[in-house]
Image (tube, rainbow, N blue to C red; front, side):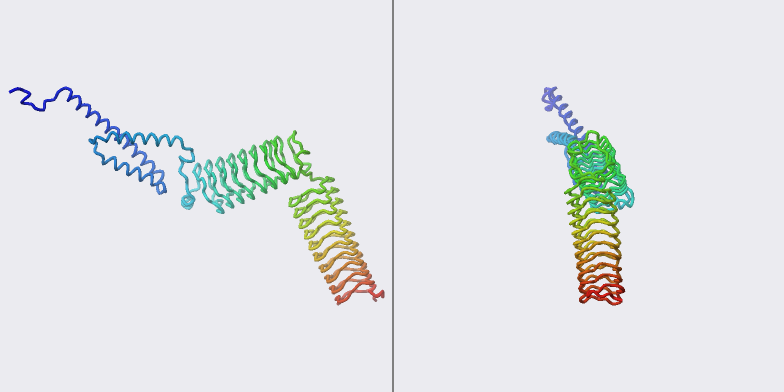
Length: 516
């Protein structure tokens, strides 16, 4: 019997090589699987540590499922290597996707809810955290100083939030909402505030050095309280109607910025870039410093200074506290609701100007002309109007408490329902003035009120000694305890007037008789 008949499974050299090849292939498949099982475990451990208790746990769950499936695979199945190859391709795609992501995407976003969980657990350092679109509107973070340096706060809502003393340096606040936010002593050095809404935000000792505020909306803000602005970028920013008084814009970029109707009194723009900036109707004074090549005439701004010409200018709503406009031409100028507290308008020409609802508390207006001017509802408390010309002026519902109108001319003026408590009108002229319903408890001695209308006026306890009241309408007036000694009441209408306890010694009565 031959050997071949004795050994029916005899192996040839080709069969041996084939077997070796299959073993090597299985070994390769196993190596690939080990490699990616290791990689899966590494990523799972990393994600578990980084995203514990987060909504993104779905990603971990998927990886865990994939790992379980791989561990159940029969390495001897013919499709094992194909599966490993598919996984390998998937990892390559994942790596490419990771490389294409921005820094914002690679750092998982912290939700508002999670932020407060961390905050309430005592965390105050959020440096470098991704807080994009977080909503902290109206919240107060100033109780304990927080650190948001290098944090991503893109499109965050921080409106009305109290961020006093908070460190936001180098943070990204692009497109964020910060309107009405409190930023007292807040550090925003080198922060990105591009296109941020900062309307009515409160700035005081705020650090904005080298910050980017290009395109930001700062309409109406006050930057006059020691705000640091070194090399800040305000290009295309809206600073209209802002109070920039005494602010230091040294070397600041204000290219194409909107500074219309802004307060630039004593502001320093040394070496600032004001190219194509809008300064229409902004106010400045002789102490304001502009760049050497700046064209003030083309800017169409208003100079606030003695003897300036601002006839028909619109200065409604400006803050011009304690400014000097002596001898200025202010004819027909609009000062509606303007703050002129303590301002000096002596000898200025304010004929037909509009001071309705303006604040002139304590203002000095010696010999100022207000002919036919509108001062209705104006605050003239303790104003000095000695020898002022208020002929035909409208002072209805104005407050003149404590004002000095000695020798002022109020002929034909309208003082209807005006508050005249404790004012001095001695020697004033009020010929044909409308004083219907006024309440007056001051000094009118020697004043000329001939033909004035005092119907229903309350003059109780007022000093009207030696006053000219010829042909005055005093119907229904309250003259109790009023001093009318030596007053001339010839032709006056006293119908219904209350003269109880009035002092009339030497007064000329309506019928021409002299009262004893």
